[in-house]
Image 1 (tube, rainbow, N blue to C red):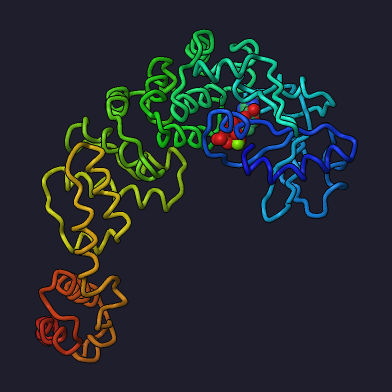
Image 2 (image 1 turned 90 degrees about the vertical axis):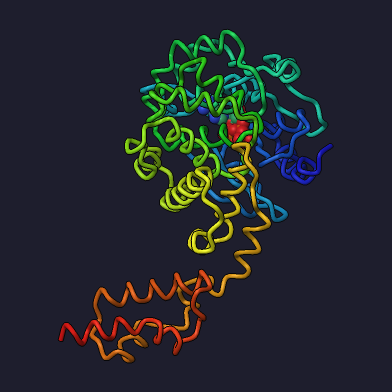
Length: 407
Ligand code: ATP
Ligand code: MG
């Protein structure tokens, strides 16, 4: 019995002692049976949300309309969801209303794939209505019930299918795959943010090759933002066996391949691409640094202290990791050493300010300030000039002379 479940047993037992049914469900049961690390332990119960709240001291309403209450116990939070069915699917998206039901069977029926429709009771007995355990053994992702119907109800499930292929290294069952191929266009109805979540999980999955291959085979990529004309780049992703350990590395490798096969001067704009995928601003900034840094290194540019300074240590190391993913030698140790030896690590470490410059040269503020400071920063980082105010002012004295000429 896994510690995560053991720790959560008191939560199940409280529900059971309250007179309700309660089970572990969803990804945690699937992952436990596969011997993988667990994310969060989800619980399903016959108790309605208000009934759940009455049984526990600390609860948070995280999705009460959908029947989900978060319970805080022993420093961990658990999502407890009332058995439910979903109905009135509009526009092939999430249902706008859910019906609470008292039977586990009904709840398991509305789940997406057989491997996600397993329930584990407090004694370790598994409820497996759709041969999910067999599919786990066979490594198959199979829709619960009629695949076409299920994707019609909620088109995100098609993205989830390929995502699980990439995470678990599973094949998608024949009928399920055929249904994705047939209904792929329904993905247009799904919010980009939700597609993005699954896409990133696929790209960072242990078996990305399988996931992307399934995307290509089903042509699901046709309806993902900006991917419809990127089959060649995706094919590179399939050919590359290295797995990636962060979201930004995943975006960077994808964009590297996308740009790699495009003619110079007509390459995908990283900012536009990621904005369309609705990633965060921070993700855009970091990915830009990674892709541009990687392109430079791939084109033979050697390690440059100023580039490492600007990128920061973490992103500079990521660039070397990505070089290795592309089959080249990464120079992580050298990057670390270079970074540690930098005279300054940010512009605030510079022993010179704009005020120093204005005072020393008797000049008004203007564009000259920025360029003088920038010149000092670069020279100090490269080790050409010492980080010393007086010496920096001496090196920059041309800026003083120039102003006198203008006056
Ligand atoms: P992860 O390990 O990434 O959390 P998960 O399977 O737990 O994977 P969740 O999104 O946390 O995925 O969903 C929990 C469970 O809810 C799933 O295992 C599945 O049973 C059900 N589920 C989630 N999304 C859908 C959906 N779109 N349609 C049907 N059932 C779903
Ligand atoms: Mg989950």
